[in-house]
Amino acid sequence: MKQYNAIKRKHPDAILLFRVGDFYETFSEDAIRASEILGITLTRRANGAASFVELAGFPHHALDTYLPKLVRAGQRVAICEQLEDPKLAKTIVKRGVTEL
Image (cartoon, rainbow, N blue to C red; front, side, top):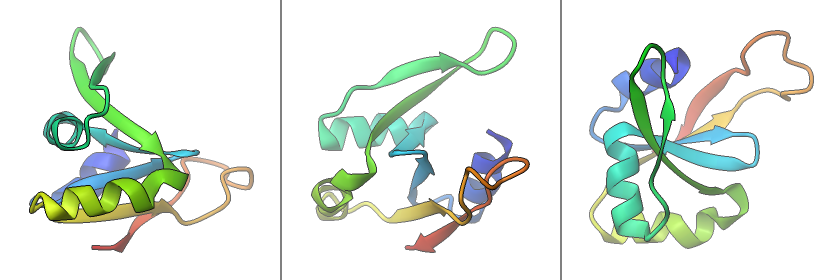
């Protein structure tokens, strides 16, 4: 979540589509908005001591289906991709915004 939060701070006015493996994930307020706009399931997961974070995601291959819906709804979107092969990463996979 530290990596996500650091990238989100750079794009606070955009829904951040954060690539995690084969999925784009959204978290917190972005997840709530994305789930409402896209009609996808909003879930929660534990995020440290007794707190939860909302999340909603979709398969990366469905980006061409979901991205236009977000844009048509008037949302600014930041697409955050994995910048290195996860199999070769020795620590957390490097990620960065590749499209805004």
